[in-house]
Length: 253
Ligand SMILES: Nc1ncnc2c1ncn2[C@@H]1O[C@H](COP(=O)(O)OP(=O)(O)OP(=O)(O)O)[C@@H](O)[C@H]1O
Ligand SMILES: [Mg+2]
Image (cartoon, rainbow, N blue to C red; front, side):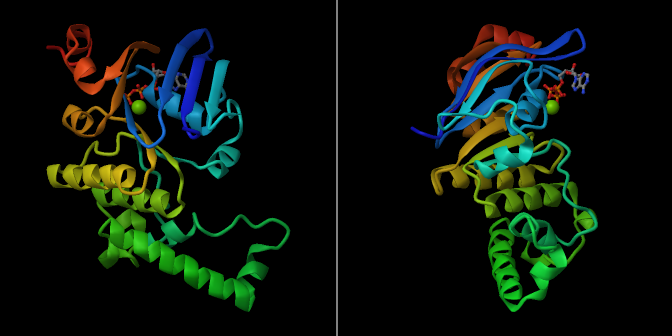
């Protein structure tokens, strides 16, 4: 499989504090791999490092055979790695439709933004982007909200919007940071279905950080348990969720 993500001995420190150390994990293509662990274990930091928001202080990261460790975010995004944030980060002052379109419009290089939109060709391209965006907005069930400002949506709807934006951009690997945290049980179910469908229906790869163990048990093919910046345990889901030390360290059972 060419689009596997492989982290080899990855470490990150803030000052003298190693937030991550010796992380060796893989995220196989076409599957959902979950990262679980207590608050502060380093899960979000790990996604920051994979997506290029932070540089690793040691170790290597390979995606589809290419070394991506330390590359800037935009280069990593162009390689097909998309990121959802724990705090969502939709553009509150843009509409739902604009939030999705913004990810589809090519980055202006030599032409100014105005010139690009001014031409007939560009207007046609924009109409196509809007049609694509609307398809994904419908896919996540936000079609009735498409002209509302994102900040007016509920937190759960904002999470759906951030998924629509990722889906529209056709990333091959999605890094999802607690996609079901802080939303209603019905919304948890909906988001779980959308993630499952993206992988089983469209062949995407997902690295999922999640505290909801029902969701993890539902979705994950493989689980890495992080504790204090290290991978304490890895395995197939029932192996990890049934593991005595994981249950003691994390679930307090
Ligand atoms: N920019 C930073 N500077 C210093 N310390 C940081 C920074 N970012 C994160 N940390 C620390 O790194 C550790 C790991 O944080 P991280 O956000 O990765 O944890 P997490 O596993 O995602 O936790 P949660 O489940 O609560 O989201 C924490 O102790 C946190 O305080
Ligand atoms: Mg986190």
